[in-house]
Image 1 (cartoon, one colour):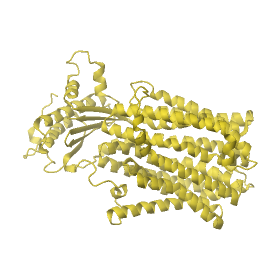
Image 2 (image 1 turned 135 degrees about the vertical axis):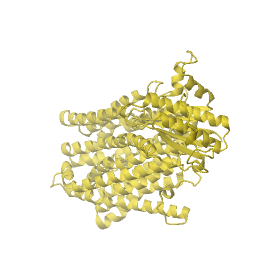
Image 3 (image 1 turned 45 degrees about the vertical axis):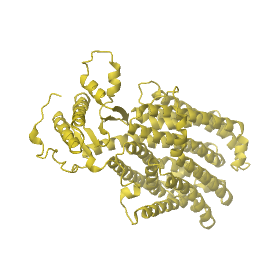
Image 4 (image 1 turned 120 degrees about the vertical axis):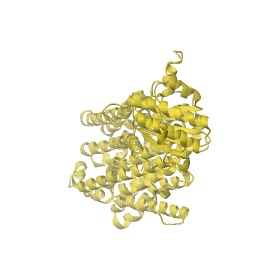
Amino acid sequence: MSQTYSPESRSGSGVPAGYEGRNKQPKISPDTEHIIKKSYFRLLPVQILGIVVVALNGFIDSLITSRSLGTHAVAAIGLFSPVATVIGITWVITIGVLILCSHDIGAGKKDDMISLFSTGVLVLSVFSLLVTAFCMIMPEFLAVVLKSDELTSEMLISYIRGYAPGVIGQVLSGVLMVFLPFNNNTRRSYYGIAVMIILNVGMDILNVTVLQWGTFGMGLATSISYLVSSAVMLVGFLGKEKTIHLRFTRLSFDRIPSVIKNGLPSLVFTIGCTAKGYIMNISLMHTIGAEAVAVMNVQNGVISILGAIPLGCAAALLTLASVYYGDEDRESLVLLTKIALTFGLLLSVISVALLMGFSTPISSLFFGRDDPAWMLTRRMLLLFPNFLILNLFVSCFTKIYQCQGKTLIVNMLTLAEPLGAGVIAVLLQPFIGADGAWISFSLSEVLCLIAIALSVFAETGSITLALTDWMKLPADFGAPEEDCMEFSVHTMEDLVQKSYDVMDFCLSRQIDRRRSKLARLSIEEMVGNVITHGFKTGKKHSVDVRVVAGDLLTIRIRDDCRAFDPSGYLDQFSGEDPLRFVGLRLIAGIAKEMTYQNNAGINTLQIKV
């Protein structure tokens, strides 16, 4: 760099101003907060839509079925919900792969991440095909197990035969949608979502009203929409230039046990949801009749759509929290959790108000006022929505524990939450009828929050509302404040001043002069490259830099500019003039390790000296 540095800007002690003894700068600057928010809000819509689309398919099926085929057909599809939940067991692999891949990103292990992702896709595909084969061969057996009666049995069998071929599309669309943001390709997620919804609605109407295929047509429409949608999203992972791509030449089956361990809460949750659905369906069918089961199916659709708000907020939190946890960035992890809870609470409150306020017209969408199911639906929409607010807190804290590997409390919460609702519903129904089923959801969330509070009290010895206590972060997690320097850069002038501050900071932490100088040069070159080529006129940009003085001197550079991989760029010109890109070549040569990732539109370059 040709810029000069004025020594008058430094303190007389030889340590940059603000670093006498400890890092006095705020740990999270407004610019750093902006980058964290930007990455979270890029992930959030995809996570919410990913959940909504699956739910929306079921909701649309229920709506068209109720109007075209009647209440018993809705009940038949509702009886299938435990099987659809069992298919959700694949989230054990999806979430486990997501957590470990995010840790790999934080640690800069790109090859390991690609290998694990490809292995996960292969395992999920094989499992899906096995499920399809079972459903196609034994639909009558499933109808018996699901306790269908004489009026719903044939409808249920027909629905299973239509639904089964699309299981692989359902599973793959879920995992691909989760990982597309890692390739900074959320637009393809939206394309896949749009295709899924349009195909499902169009084919529902065609199959039922024109072709008269009944519940078989409903299931087939869902199958085709999933298969086409997953094909659209799969294209986003073809090509070695992608950050995450499919590569089946080097698989990581040895990491599958770790994947299952990290994803185990999803299995526990699936077991709990399956048991809850099974218990509630049988109880409602026995005490009230098919009308109540039909309303439960509507409730499943509504809760799955609006429940995507707390679950989506928690899922986006898990994705980024796993990255920051792998990077041991305590401050970013805490700020991210605050963002997820605050924004999620706002959306959840709005959703509850809308559901209650529009309970009458929503009920009329499904049933006529003379149908007993109409009043049951209206009561349901007035009693259960508060669940969404409580579920936000339970879901977010559970995901934070999950990314830390706290498997005991995570498994306890994920099992107790759905199963508790089923048990409470059965206990209350003899006294208050179907209302017991609707309020059981909120009561179960309250019990989970009480359990979390008790565990926090047991660990801290006091009643506390401190977020870090509820997050259960170890006191020694992350770099000590005095060994960490963070700042943001907006101009080349800022860069020159800050780069020398970094050198003095390193020297004050007993880093030898050679490595301290290399840290300065690395920041000057890499951040200068971002400012020169990445900043767009008329748009606000900043570069967020974090320096940690440990056994290895670690420099992390984050920005929200266009994607640029320094090492990959150099590889393209490896045989050319050695004086070309001399700055990049110099840093790549002196660094012990240099890794780059683009996650949710945020560039992260990590250099270890």
